[in-house]
Image (cartoon, rainbow, N blue to C red; front, side, top):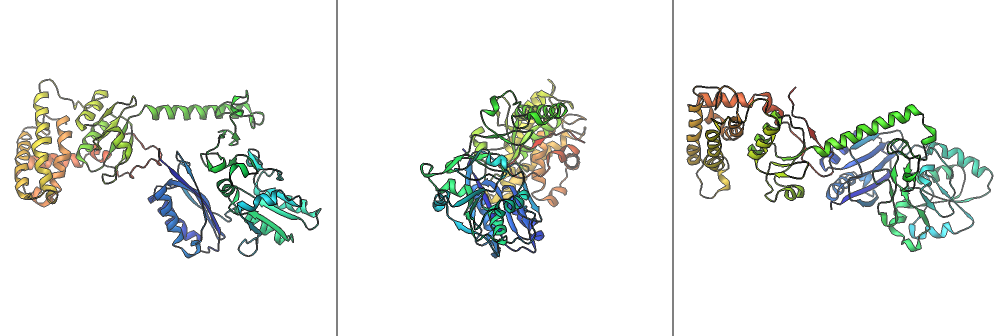
Length: 513
């Protein structure tokens, strides 16, 4: 099972150049296949990211190269599936929106309390313990005996605090939130308001659930998190809640058994507050999501490498047949485990059909695609089939053998590149002769043979393009140029990012414009 590292982070620090930080930070995340949301403002950084363990660590290292983030604290947890679907770095006025100007946690803040010492404050009858999170977060879990301000947004908190402490003399206050960032501002606000004894949970609920054993814990319920996990439990294990797609409230397993729950349409929290028209809109959205999911499940998955001639000819056949695929571009120096799981050969192309059948030979992929649909008549007629198969076999046999030793001579001990170039040229001369009376190898229209062979001739030509252009093969050179400049070839040579399991599915519809 793939392990995804989740890193929650924040730091209040003066960032007058925060706008200039956005682009390089986003690039670092994308380069390392990390997703999530990070907020930048003049007051600091805040957010959560997730991805491969090494990728997240490289992003954190990138941040810490800036001296202002050298002591950046990270709260880590793990997930079995990607918690985020895309990466966003946003510029904001505040990294947590309280709406009170002049509050600066770098200048004044409450007293930090480590998770191991937090229980003592909870059990002190003279301490007012306040949950600073929104009401829907508090609803699924909080500390025993904590006060719930029933906030709709964090902007409501300052007014609630002013009213609450206007009637109290010399209060002793302890605050907590998910990761600690809200408490930084909350305690700074209270200190500015004149409250002297103000404490907050260092690292927030997440650090408490990570560090404090469950049998010693005063936490009740689960902790809401702003990613696909929805909630976590002690030890930061993934919780039991899901999200209502209509109102975005967390819903429990029991909520899903009620009459008010309709997947994607309503739940006990929102059923009475949405109109029939709204419910109809939610139902249509849910229908489209399910159709898209079903379409995705029905699509074959193609493992490919852009410059591999075997993969090229497979993509050409998929393109002409207009067979949409989920494409996974692989790096041959770092092939994913999923490729080997599909085919132990670990070579491209590999096509995994919706029924689980695996096709791991390029000609077989071409054959399968053209059997689905062959609008340009690439499959050979009975009269040409034997000859066409023999020509392709010569390409894949002797010609490919000499091509490899010509183009990649340094990989083979004792090989003289020019000798293999000359031996490969005999096959190219044969192709040039076949093109003497027709535009393509088997007539006036492209065929399976043209598309199966052309990627390899292209590979030969670019080994020494100047030499190739000087050869007495005018018809072959014209044939190759027509192939390379065709819309069909352009459609299958689009550059794509190397696939990682953390990526959204890349659906490719090969139809030409």
